[in-house]
Length: 97
Length: 116
Length: 311
Length: 97
Figure 1 (cartoon, chains in turn purple, blue, orange, brown):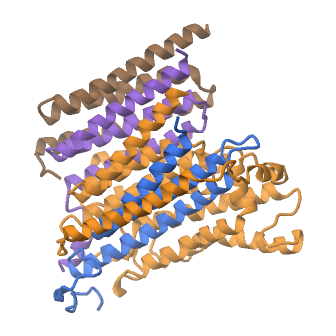
Figure 2 (tube, chains in turn blue, orange, purple, yellow):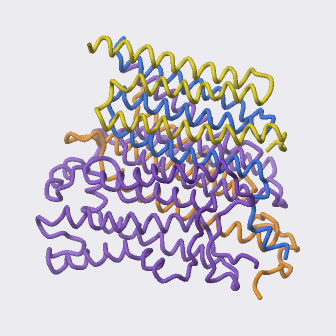
Figure 3 (cartoon, each protein chain N blue to C red):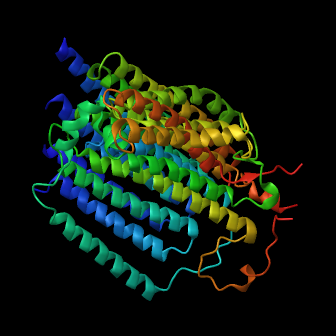
């Protein structure tokens, strides 16, 4: 088995694993559990992307992973904030006057 | 043996169907916007498949459909932003996330407006 | 080869499962998470389709910025009452059958695509040296189909005007607000550490776009996300929409593009044509200004209509 | 030399994939949010970290390596921030989303 093959296999494995973790988003029960599964999916997706890209010698994949990492960081924090303070809401403020 | 392009081509048309179904059936406006984006991504993917099939002259993929998809993604984002802003404004006015075809009399009542 | 096919089949199954789940799940917030995960998978598929430029755009715009926009909307709509009921079972069936028919029609088209596939790749490759660019997709975007790209940059402005026009009369001239209620230490830290990385990546993508995958739209989207992060954390305030410099910044990209395009009528015999030998510097100038304008426009699209803080 | 680097890649990537599996299993099987968070951080930090380290010899030097490490650092930093928020949400026992 050559190294690219092994990297591809590892990409499939990681993807399948984190996909399994998506069950936790469905089941919950708490908001924190859903967030954790989403976070794991993001990290696993980035790992799979890197493995896939290096295996097929698609060099631009590093840039894609970099952008994903930046935006996933923001998205997961925005998500946690939005979920843990449901009142992260400006429109209510203007309403209550 | 099925080829990569056929595989992704078929999944793109399934995505179009799924997005269309969600757009029609789901009553919540935000979910409709989401479904619309799903539909759009299916169309973009189909473009990607066509680009991949047009590989040649040393390129792995035809750049013209790729450029069209990049254009499309930006326009889709702009449209989504406008739709979300409309929806939030509607909520601000009525306190309800309504659908367009609702025959509820309360939403036609003069809403508490922010305008002076 | 079969292993690569296994990757593709796995990706296909996963993306379809996540799409179904995004549509079917009850809670809107969870559905938006599904959408962000879906975007990540799509970026993987674009890499598999040998389209890294599109993968970058998908990661930055399709999944990233759209995800942020929808997350914000879902958080604000959490206590919205939904007064309309889902359609009845019969209507669902009709819709399902119709959508299946649409899919089947398209699937037939996919299976009957002409072979060998028509392609413009040789034409692009043949003319790419004239532009001095190394990335064929940037070549198409800024040279061969520049009119598309010009209109695409312009279309962000009416969208932004549309969003702004949704402000109540008394809010006009105020600044958009993206801040969450309670400022949070962790969020503040993230907004202090992440943007320097992000700004470097954004500039790198724009600069790199001439020869490698990347470009104005990808770079601009990353910069916009970083700006939105700073605004969300409350480390800076968005400028009031009536500021003159802000409006100049918004139109600068399209204006420079248009001026260079019009100059092309005189110097190169066609609208949006570049004089021989000057193509690359002109394209880089356009890309640079365009990146800034796009970043500002996308950031303001996320921030939403202007408001005035009740004082 | 290249054989040694290849073996190093294989070892690190397999170990990374294992940590993703461990993280997912923990996320699915552990009884309460805080232990699940513990499992998640293993996948985030060690799983992606080992994959990144394993891929280092396979990418262009130095730009590719810098990008890889930057990706890991960004994900690590985001994971740290998000874990903090999630642990707080789990402790406060916030309402299920």
